[in-house]
Amino acid sequence: MFGGLTPAAWDALAGPRFYSTSAWLRFCAAEYGGCGDAVVRDGAAVPYVELDGPPARGPYRWGELLAARGLPAPPPGGLLVGPREGYQTHFLGEPGGVPGVIAELRERAAGRPCVALYVPTSEVELARRAGVRAPAVVLEADAWIAVDGWPGYLSRKKRYMVRSARRAFAEAGYTVKHLPLAECVGSLAVPAAKTLAKYGIDTDPDTELVALNSHAEHMGEAARVAVCFRDGGEPVGFCLYYVGTDAIFLRWAGFDYDRLSGAHEYANVVLASQLDLAAELGLRWVHAGVQAPAAKALYGARLRPLWLLDLSPDSVLAAAAEQVRRHNAQFCRRLREDPRTGGALDLETWGSIDEETG
Image (cartoon, rainbow, N blue to C red; front, side, top):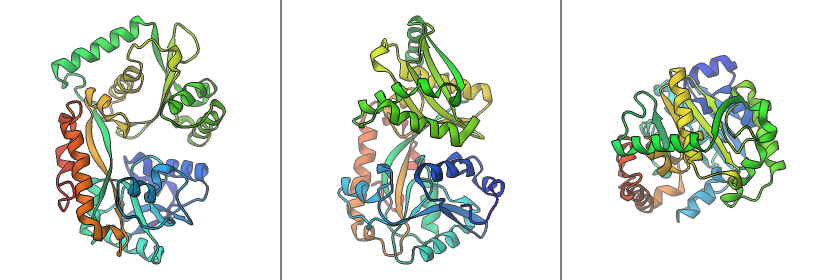
């Protein structure tokens, strides 16, 4: 799974990149089957998995992602580069080793597609220097909230909104407790299912209990939750998270909407409580992920692009560079022109990569 390295040696390469750690990759293998593999070469490394068809998870099916954006897509199957969950793909270790890693990935793909998903701008730049020429396609805006100085660095209006939300939350009788997931997993299935149902996902508490138990079983004590209680009753909401070496990584939030009072539950459980905890632990960031960018921007998030990058030497996207450029520019423009997110863009990471953002 780790290209011949021990888990400890692999984690030394992964560093602060939680979704590339050996523990997370083992979780992905247990969750989706197949152990995966990795290329380790010239001091650099990257995980990958071989696919006979589309990936199990919709957000990783590059054919559907590209078709939804009106772009040509490589056929299903081949090499999915990076973890199968987490929305973060990094080249690990020495930047100078990335050309050799990409060359070996292409060799192992043997003419099949070789696609990396949810790649930060810094990694796209490394791939560019390694000779990857296919245009990168922006997929999501990734939210990172700096811990140091929060909420003092927010605007006066935003600081007032944060204070008001905290006060309303407390006056509604809510409390938040940080617990190991294994201690309370059975009481979180209902809010998990109700949140997914709200966004059109057909599920039920029994199904989500299995998914929560998988985190508890395979991630052990690392899987923790901020649990929201009201007046000592059963949980009305939660946020599953993992503590990395310099950041808290938010993984999953769920709420029992029928039992909420409209007292800014999401903002307090998912964002404020995690920022408070990160400050207590001396961490630098809260990684808030790819959903609800406007709500996260209100709490100080900086939004960075995540890209799809076809590493194949004969990518079908190469002939669609202008279509890709238009898509990327439109995606960035929507965020820039939205008053809720326009000031939150991390402009350095949205800067032109071969004019891919227009």
